Amino acid sequence: MEERRIRKYVPVTLRVDENGKIRPLVIEFDEQHKYLVDKVLDVRRAACQSAGGVGDRFTCRIQGQETYIWLEKGRWFIAAKPEYLTPDEAESKPET
View 1 (cartoon, rainbow, N blue to C red):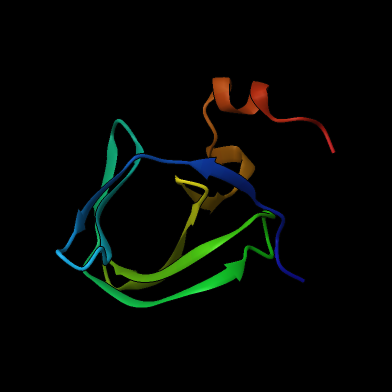
View 2: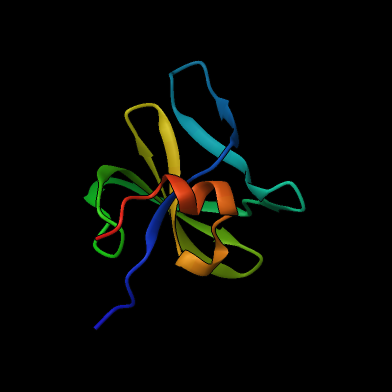
């Protein structure tokens, strides 16, 4: 069974081409951790099974690792382990 995760909303630097195609370039996990997206491998509508939520799921290669980021109603999120949340983020999450 997959470990439970939390939706962590993150800033994303992206490029939008002349046809409206979106390509994420940089994901900012926090102020000290910004990750360049090496390549977008796939984009599809999908649910995040580990953290909940539905949106456009971008399968990306970042530092040689395949990972997902979601675009949900104009906001980007990743499925983060609860221990990686900042104190402010943890406070704003309801207990389940």
